[in-house]
Image (tube, rainbow, N blue to C red; front, side):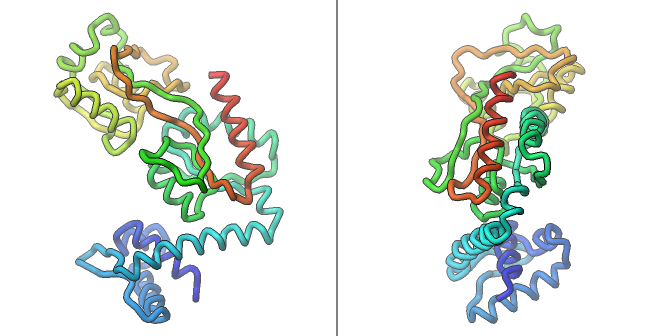
Length: 291
């Protein structure tokens, strides 16, 4: 059995679309369909059901997905174990955008001092995407938010900080009441698909505030620049990041709000790249301590 076909199957299920899987694999949708047909023929069962442009696993496909993901992860570890040099010099790292724009450059600067010859392959994405990639063995570690559920014992989590929600407002409005600003000023919403955006939306609902929404986007630096230009106010996690400097943005605390965005590093306990990961964690602790 060609293990690349297993990888194609897992990716198709993840995407829910052959065309999207083909785009990520940089092959044609026809090639994806051909690989899946060969896999189904070899296994003697249907793995996917097709409805228009979308696909979903059959009952056998669900069973296959769990085992294929574990097999691909074990294969990745096997390759690393055979080639010890690769295991000590290559790290596949995931990161959410906030980490890429804030903590990660400083962490990597310390990391390469310890491992100057290391190669770090960095993949950006949402926390849920990075967590799934970690379980599939596609990533060794990820700098992200804590998933909204209890983690299995096979996964290790190192919390770096907690970030409360704050109101981001133009500096000229810093003395105004935060709740009044949220009701009166145009609102720049932090994307509700993200953890911090979901928390902001829940807090607004709890307070009964329906803001005058002007923009919705997933980049905190971009939101801060829009606020700096006087285009509205925003509700977002209090990220201590370099791009705040020079912006005329006030961060106003919110009385009584208890939402916290938990930010840290996640990895598999049994990883063969444990030394690299531990060094990454140590550098992250130092970076947070000096912020």
